Image (tube, rainbow over all chains, first blue to last red; front, side):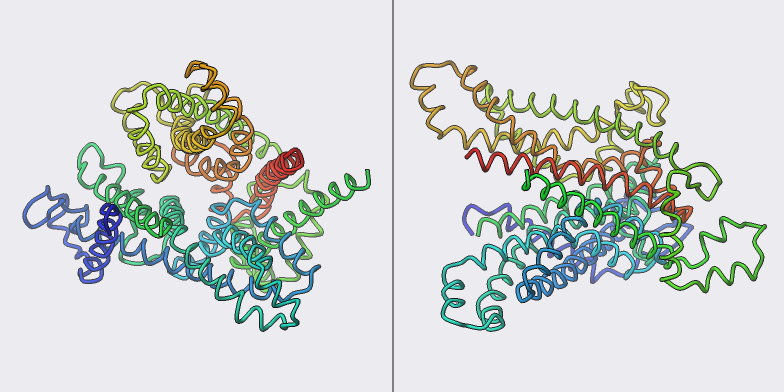
Length: 256
Length: 297
């Protein structure tokens, strides 16, 4: 705890944002209250549709956090399962799969995500699929490299020499270690996935949900900077806070 | 000689795998939007029956159709009837200028930060914090801030377009700030590691000035610097697609976005092939350098 005050504060802020976002009601559209300045009723003013900016940015942050967490978990689950199969596969199949992952890495993730995100109809699942496909290759590459390290560990080599079957080694020795690596990877990759998601949303890939994500809010409200700066800057500030907190929290795990 | 041929064979096989992946992605995309591209293509000219036929096409028949069209890739046309190749060439030139300028600015920025951290030790901590913060900030936010500050508030540079070199300065700076910060963090860490090496300790023991020692350390950073840029090519393109759309530069990223919005599969395919080939070549170069370094060690 001592010496990590900033990191713990980041975790506290993230939890507070999540709780506020989950408990907050959907921002209500009321055209008679459009473009209100900051007041007691609207802490950060209101949008052109009369929605409270505070509610909008908090629910947007939760949407960004949940979507990036879901996408990362899905991508890691697939990569973890593929790594297990990779361990059991014969050498030529392993080489082919490693080559495929390398080839996939040559296509920048944002290009894959944009293509998939625009071609699929607007939905939560479309954005999730786009993110999973764009983030999968680097995650899989990392896990394969770690798997190679685990494979060469002394006790696993010893188990192989002593005649333990590959499935036994995988179940009892390799997968538990790989699971720890996957957990670590989840924590360190979450900020970059949230960043990718925000960039995608900024470029127009949307979930179609009523709760607008932060990237989309920034794209829409950026043009109001001169007339209603609070409206333009609130989603920017919330995105930066979310990203900094995620980074700071991941640093705590990295040190641990 | 045999080893060289084997390595070249592997590299070509890798590139062909990249092409196959893009090919499958393109057909998959076409399959996701059954008929939509054809609707755009045919407009008022297409009959209802022909559109239904196109919509009912299976994945394999689409695959075969695109494969059959591959030999004529150089004469492919977009849905608007213009040739694909000149468009890609023009976009590549714009992206190359943007990337080149970004590279130049980020080197200057990274080195300036490194010099400041070295000769003004008090500034090292705040600089590292600032670089970490910039590294976390999304590139589109940096772009928006630059447009607002340099183009609207100070009226120094144009906010968008690609009419001349002047138009590329602001977008290149937006990319360079992020990559310069990343470069600074990398080289700073590497220099800290070098501090404990025997040749640096010996240089200090001989009474060399801080400036000379810094130059020795900088010379040793050349290889990590090159490898950093080769690894970051994909990120540079990712940054370019966002910045190009923000600053209305007709580069590869903007062209891809345009092609996606039009559901123009051939344009998407050609665009992805060019980008992936560049990224693949740079990663190949990086692997060769890393392997030669390993051999030397």
